[in-house]
Amino acid sequence: MTASAPIAVVFLLRWADAGWRDHAVRFLDSYSAFDAGAGHRLYVALKGFETEAAEAEAAAILSRASHRRVVVPEAGRDIGAYLAVSSVIDEPRVCFLNSHSRILCRLWLSKLAANLDLPGVGLVGATGSYESLHVIDPAFPAFPNPHLRTNGFMLDVETLRTITADVAIEGRQDAFLFESGPLSMTNRVLARGLRVLTVGRNGRGYDVDWWPWSDGFRQGLQANLLIGDNQTRHFDTLQRPEREQLARQSWGRYRSRAVLPGR
Image 1 (cartoon, helix red, strand yellow):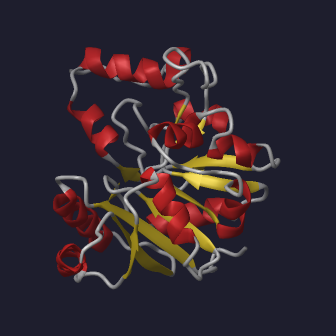
Image 2 (image 1 turned 180 degrees about the horizontal axis):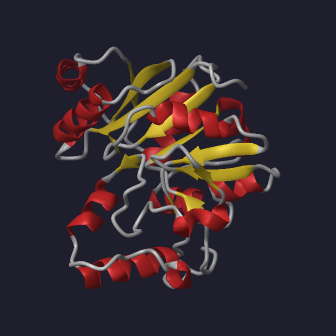
């Protein structure tokens, strides 16, 4: 797959989110502000917009950007919506952005695509974490539990269909397991002998061992984030003790650069 291969960019909107209108505007502001740097088609997955009036309201807000809307059921969480949309897109490569995503730099899409084109790479994303839910649910791997977060990630559609052939997302637990369980999206790609990278604003791709030192998610000023979300914005608002706690959850003993001097 070459860097010029067509890309589907899928942005998710959820009717059940009281702030969905604000989510749409925030995303569109960032989408308009930063050149993607790569040819693509924008899809908007309207999750739970099951009436004509609801879809019409969304269409009016989204009209400022050329896009194709795909209505998907409310069931299935974010991952279920991604899988539903992947069945109708024509492009061979897809980048998923959740409802809280905000693009933070120019050439964001080309930076993801360039890293996905590297030898042996099967999956790239804007943020990753070592966090584990094992302490509250032993079904999850113990720390460190490297996994890409699903706020923004890219892969080839063929890869997506291969790794999700036996996946059914029926509830919150299924979604959590697909993101960070023993058979997570990340682990399924790694099991195929492929690399999984986070990609920074600087355009560099980071292999799993380098994630804690990428100046990204819950690290210092998060200055190298390519795409932000509600969790990264929340981290920025916290005082140092609270940031330390979240950094510890995500990176544990590897968090040497997770919190800089300051507040």
